[in-house]
View: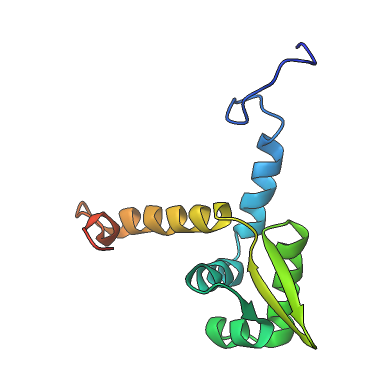
Length: 120
């Protein structure tokens, strides 16, 4: 392969395939999916607010947030002693949304899932 040749990230032999698998592995956790869904609906939230939303302890949520932050899925803003978390970009949110929509198809039993109806 020519080193100067630019490769599309969507090619099967793309250098990003292994990193994409790491993203899927990281998102294969219900608490992390719930965190992303909560942040999708809100611009930014504190650890305590996220803990309330996902019904987990702030310590447990903090550990999940640290992993998502290390993967650059989340970013932070500090205000005094409080840290607020937000999605780094729209892609993790879209991945989670698409996974939820796929799950709706899996249980729809041949019916059209709710996300296909107008005004979802």
